[in-house]
Image (cartoon, rainbow, N blue to C red; front, side):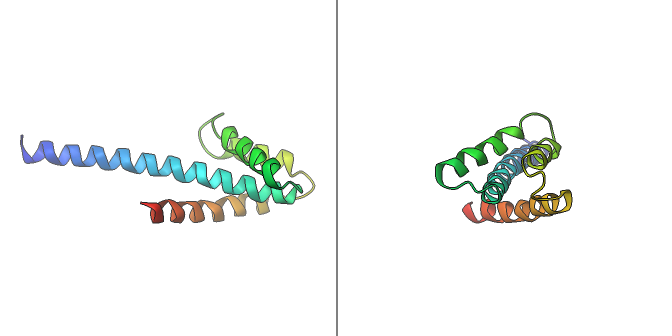
Length: 104
């Protein structure tokens, strides 16, 4: 094998690792935002965990964050506005990435 082949494998492995970490961080962020929203809705315990799971699964509808935002906006109508939801999503994305990086 050549150095080029080794370098190519290294880049492929890094790409796969980064993609996996991004997926884990997004799923973690969605769980965290689901727990936050559950608290606003007055849910606790198993009910809050179940609700957070619905937020996680809502992210599988389409690429990006809009499916999660729409679910949260509908559920939190009259409780939290767009700016609050989007700010919390961004904040928890950073939190989730930090948690994932600290686990590895």
